[in-house]
Length: 120
Image 1 (cartoon, rainbow, N blue to C red):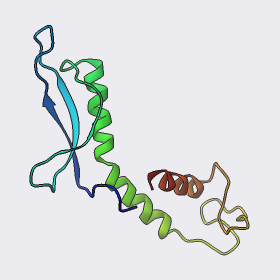
Image 2 (image 1 turned 90 degrees about the horizontal axis):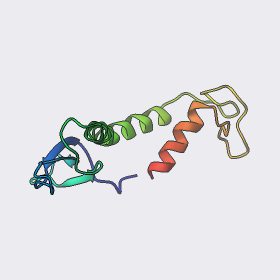
Image 3 (image 1 turned 135 degrees about the horizontal axis):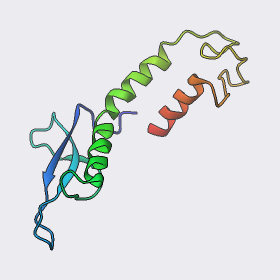
Image 4 (image 1 turned 45 degrees about the vertical axis):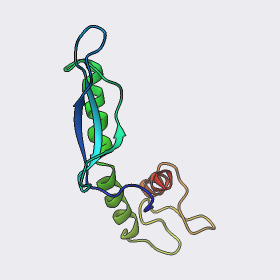
Protein backbone atom coordinates (compact mmCIF):
# COMPACT_ATOMS: atom_id res chain seq x y z
CA UNK A 1 0.00 0.00 0.00
CA UNK A 2 2.82 2.39 -0.77
CA UNK A 3 1.36 3.78 -4.00
CA UNK A 4 -0.30 6.76 -2.30
CA UNK A 5 1.38 10.06 -1.49
CA UNK A 6 3.07 9.62 1.86
CA UNK A 7 1.94 11.84 4.73
CA UNK A 8 1.77 13.94 6.67
CA UNK A 9 -1.25 15.50 5.03
CA UNK A 10 -2.91 18.69 6.23
CA UNK A 11 -6.29 20.26 5.54
CA UNK A 12 -6.17 23.88 4.45
CA UNK A 13 -8.10 26.18 2.21
CA UNK A 14 -7.64 28.49 -0.72
CA UNK A 15 -9.86 31.33 -1.78
CA UNK A 16 -11.38 31.23 -5.24
CA UNK A 17 -11.73 34.17 -7.56
CA UNK A 18 -14.97 36.07 -7.01
CA UNK A 19 -18.00 34.36 -8.54
CA UNK A 20 -20.63 36.11 -10.64
CA UNK A 21 -22.10 37.71 -7.52
CA UNK A 22 -18.73 39.11 -6.58
CA UNK A 23 -18.17 36.96 -3.49
CA UNK A 24 -14.97 35.08 -2.83
CA UNK A 25 -15.46 31.44 -1.86
CA UNK A 26 -13.42 28.90 0.10
CA UNK A 27 -12.08 25.72 -1.45
CA UNK A 28 -10.87 23.11 1.07
CA UNK A 29 -7.85 21.10 -0.05
CA UNK A 30 -5.58 18.47 1.44
CA UNK A 31 -1.85 19.04 0.94
CA UNK A 32 1.24 17.01 1.71
CA UNK A 33 3.19 19.20 4.11
CA UNK A 34 6.52 17.53 3.30
CA UNK A 35 6.55 18.86 -0.25
CA UNK A 36 8.65 21.94 -0.88
CA UNK A 37 5.72 23.63 -2.63
CA UNK A 38 2.54 22.16 -1.15
CA UNK A 39 0.30 20.89 -3.92
CA UNK A 40 -3.14 19.40 -3.37
CA UNK A 41 -3.40 15.68 -2.67
CA UNK A 42 -7.18 16.06 -2.80
CA UNK A 43 -9.82 18.74 -3.20
CA UNK A 44 -12.66 18.24 -0.73
CA UNK A 45 -15.74 19.52 -2.50
CA UNK A 46 -16.58 22.66 -4.40
CA UNK A 47 -16.02 26.36 -3.70
CA UNK A 48 -18.49 27.52 -1.05
CA UNK A 49 -19.29 30.81 0.67
CA UNK A 50 -17.42 30.96 3.98
CA UNK A 51 -19.52 29.61 6.88
CA UNK A 52 -22.15 27.99 4.64
CA UNK A 53 -23.32 24.39 5.24
CA UNK A 54 -21.45 23.29 2.10
CA UNK A 55 -18.22 24.92 3.26
CA UNK A 56 -18.51 23.30 6.72
CA UNK A 57 -19.04 19.88 5.12
CA UNK A 58 -16.08 20.41 2.75
CA UNK A 59 -13.93 21.37 5.75
CA UNK A 60 -14.95 18.21 7.66
CA UNK A 61 -14.26 16.07 4.58
CA UNK A 62 -10.83 17.68 4.11
CA UNK A 63 -9.88 16.95 7.73
CA UNK A 64 -11.03 13.33 7.40
CA UNK A 65 -9.03 12.91 4.17
CA UNK A 66 -5.97 14.52 5.79
CA UNK A 67 -6.12 11.93 8.58
CA UNK A 68 -6.09 9.02 6.08
CA UNK A 69 -2.33 8.23 6.20
CA UNK A 70 -2.39 8.12 10.01
CA UNK A 71 -5.59 6.05 10.08
CA UNK A 72 -4.14 3.64 7.51
CA UNK A 73 -0.90 3.17 9.47
CA UNK A 74 -2.80 2.63 12.73
CA UNK A 75 -5.13 0.07 11.17
CA UNK A 76 -2.22 -1.80 9.55
CA UNK A 77 -0.43 -1.93 12.91
CA UNK A 78 -3.55 -3.15 14.72
CA UNK A 79 -4.22 -5.92 12.18
CA UNK A 80 -0.57 -7.05 11.97
CA UNK A 81 -0.02 -7.13 15.73
CA UNK A 82 -3.35 -8.51 16.95
CA UNK A 83 -3.04 -11.85 18.79
CA UNK A 84 -4.51 -14.74 16.85
CA UNK A 85 -4.54 -18.53 16.81
CA UNK A 86 -4.43 -21.05 13.99
CA UNK A 87 -8.08 -22.05 14.23
CA UNK A 88 -9.92 -19.24 16.06
CA UNK A 89 -10.23 -15.59 15.17
CA UNK A 90 -8.45 -13.44 17.76
CA UNK A 91 -11.02 -10.70 17.22
CA UNK A 92 -14.34 -12.48 17.64
CA UNK A 93 -13.42 -16.04 18.69
CA UNK A 94 -15.18 -17.70 15.74
CA UNK A 95 -13.69 -20.56 13.75
CA UNK A 96 -11.64 -19.37 10.77
CA UNK A 97 -12.46 -20.35 7.19
CA UNK A 98 -10.34 -22.64 4.99
CA UNK A 99 -8.07 -19.72 4.05
CA UNK A 100 -7.24 -19.19 7.72
CA UNK A 101 -9.23 -15.97 8.08
CA UNK A 102 -12.45 -15.02 9.78
CA UNK A 103 -15.09 -14.06 7.23
CA UNK A 104 -17.87 -12.97 9.58
CA UNK A 105 -18.96 -9.53 8.40
CA UNK A 106 -19.65 -8.36 11.96
CA UNK A 107 -16.09 -9.25 13.08
CA UNK A 108 -13.81 -6.24 13.68
CA UNK A 109 -10.86 -8.13 12.19
CA UNK A 110 -12.79 -8.87 8.99
CA UNK A 111 -13.94 -5.23 8.81
CA UNK A 112 -10.37 -4.00 9.33
CA UNK A 113 -8.96 -6.26 6.60
CA UNK A 114 -11.79 -5.23 4.25
CA UNK A 115 -10.99 -1.53 4.87
CA UNK A 116 -7.28 -2.15 4.22
CA UNK A 117 -8.10 -3.98 0.98
CA UNK A 118 -10.24 -1.01 -0.09
CA UNK A 119 -7.27 1.30 0.50
CA UNK A 120 -4.89 -0.85 -1.54
